[in-house]
Image 1: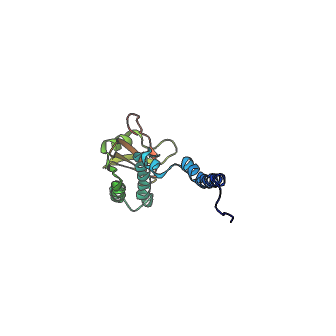
Image 2: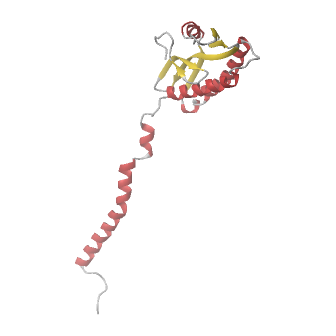
Image 3: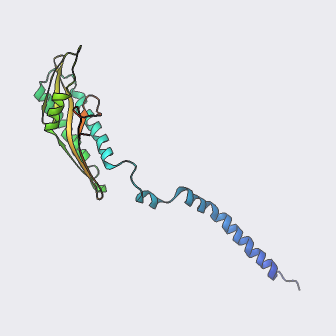
Length: 191
């Protein structure tokens, strides 16, 4: 009678062959783990952009969006165009302030009256060949007359961004015509 069961030596080779197949099957999984990491690495690592930069980008867009429809409005005087801008900006900054509450980031945005006054005095655009009037500041907003039309040109804001492990605050100037953050016209600690 012939036996169909493998002998001791054949059985050892079969076990080695099965182990080799398992190693080959697991190799791509181990390789992917070491190359790509795992989702836990993403949460524990530092954020690429600090919360402050996200807030500043959102404020740049909010400033531009609030001011764009008002540029060159001939039927409005300085105070009414300023108030319309403030109303439009406040609606947008409320959204920026509440956008990241669920992730534990608190944002507080307030218009800075004294910084806007400084900007109106020291940073008012003008010069030869320009038909620009003087700048006036009120409620953190700088308005200038250009060729007989009132233009909102800048806004100064205090920004506080706080999370569990960080708190950043600063004074920022935003050019309403371009929506970009602009520098402090007199230097100093403004951002």
